[in-house]
Image (cartoon, rainbow, N blue to C red; front, side):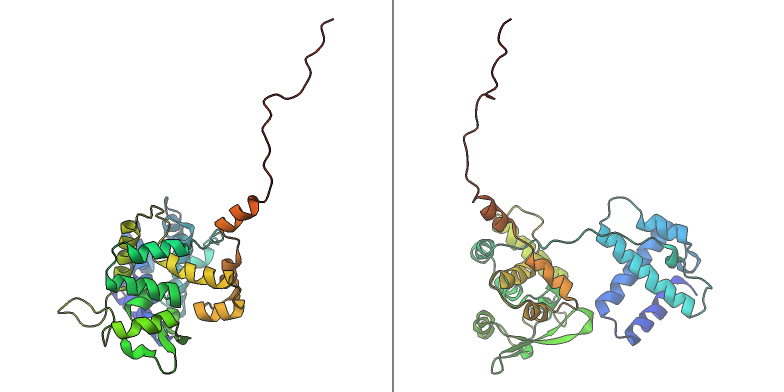
Length: 288
C-alpha cells in the first residue's frame, strides 16, 4: 500500500473508534510531514527514521510527545493489520515534557482586550473564552441552537468528540440576543458552515496586539486559562472547575491551583525592607 492508501485506512480505523476529526487530521499531517522530511515511505520507516524526526532541533517537548504518540498509534495499527511484523515506535524513548504552567490573562488585560477596538464579533469570542472556558475550535462552532436560555445551558462539542452541556454564565446569556441566528461566526460568503478555530486564534492575537499587550506568550487559549484561574482564585470547588473545563483528569485542573505571579509578589512584599549598609562593619587591622 502507498502512503495515501495507508493514511486513508488509518483514518477509517480512527473514525470507527470515534476519534475526533481534529485528532485524525493532525495525525495525518504529522505522518505526511515525517515521510517528506525523512524521504521514506511510511511502511518502510525504521526506528532510526522515527528517532531522527522526533529528535530534530528547535521543536517543543510537547510536539515531540505528540509526534511520538502519533507514531505509536499509527504503527500499532499497521502491525495489527499485519502490514508489517513489528512496531518500530515501541523502541522510541519516552519524551520528558516539563510540567505546563497556565499563562492566563489578568482581568485587567481582558478589560483592555474588550475596550481597545476589537470588533463585536471578536468581543463575543473573548467573552466565550473568558466566561465559558471555550477553546478556539469550540468558539468557532457555536450555533444559536446550542444555547438554551430557558434551561440556562450551552451545548459544546468539545475535545475528543464529547458533547457537554455547560451552565450558561449571565454575561453570555446577555450576549446571546445580540448575536445572529445560526452560526455565530459563519464562514465567509460562498462557504458553508462556520469559521475555523485557527481564525478565532488569529483574531484573538490581533486583539492582544491592538490592546498593546506585548507578552507574546499570551494566546487565545490564555483566556481559557484565565477562566480556570479565576474560578480557583475565587474558591470554586476544584471538582466543579474540572467539570466546567471538561478536563478528563483532575491533575490537569490542579495546575490552576498553582500560585500566580501576582500572588507571589504580594506574598514577598510582606517582608520588611532594610537599609543596605555601605560598609561591612569589619574593623581595620591595628598597626603593629
